[in-house]
Image: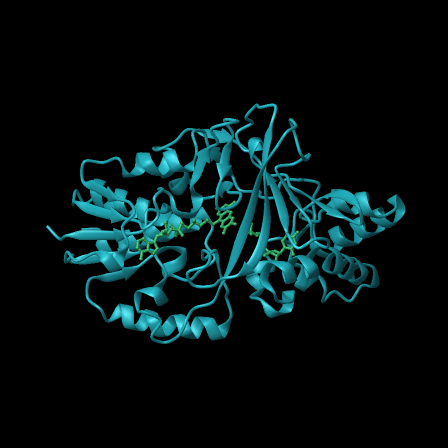
Length: 370
Ligand code: FAD
Ligand code: UDP
């Protein structure tokens, strides 16, 4: 039986550990250098208020993949939840992503009607149009709309978030938040959406609770002396190779978590501030699980540059140059027997949770399934 080591107890590492333990009936050791399970989906119940806090930013699970949903549902019940965030701009609160509801919130009725008709005629009701694509439209009114949304909702937010203009980042990033030709005010339209009823950490704990799995926290890979036949590494690939080709860039975040002495702070779980302030958004955590308290907890999210040893890696920065650097590490990894990279940091990809799980399924089926 091969000796298996998984580095990282985030969702990628935990799913793989469960598959190896359950389906292959092999023993597996999972290590993580943090003291808490679950990687960046770690959440905890605040002692004073009983509110569940998403330590590394707001996490809403959403997927169209039934296999992923059914798998996770073995380890948690769900609190059904649809993200309906809003944004403050020009001093008003409006619906995001920009949709037909937003049109009527920001323009006069006649103007909104005219643009609505043109959007439906050009693209069709229900279509999601990336802002960079809408900007290419030749129609004067649609061009005006594209410019308006771009200026008010994308340009400054993206500059704050990435330190770059929308054109300078991979188009798949801004396409995550398209102009949505619909009155459906949900941020995501996936078939399955929710928050684990007892938290993400509990879900991961249940996934790792298996007779074949041993978990060791506060344990860094670099301090491991024991030899393993197979190492599955969900940490950063450049760190594994001691940055020999250079550092892969990341965007980091700082969360200012505050307990506020009133029942609710804002109207929605997430409020974006595209234009003002240095922060991008404020999350009010009690909304996730509809928890009651006369106090509330918010986190104010400040994007910042990732600096080794100073803060955490949050977002890979996708562009051809960084991809080329990643490929150098990947080529080296592929020629090292028994070494595999998985997850957001191992693959250097902007994965949502469902895609992270899907990728691990694929990896297990292609590489490990007997
Ligand atoms: P991670 O969670 O990063 O886990 C990697 C683990 O490896 C960490 O615990 C780390 O400590 C450990 N590790 C690294 N190096 C070592 C080492 N040398 N030794 C030991 N341990 C090591 N997705 C959604 O689907 N919905 C959302 O709403 C959503 N919101 C997000 C909001 C923010 C602000 C961010 C940044 C991401 C969001 N995501 C969301 C994405 C989600 O966080 C990721 O898909 C998920 O966390 C990826 O899990 P992972 O296991 O691949 O990586
Ligand atoms: N974005 C924006 N304005 C917004 C929301 C998002 O410009 O109000 C852009 C920004 O570049 C951001 C990207 O769209 O990084 C993806 O946003 P998403 O909400 O998916 O970000 P995440 O939740 O992953 O941080």
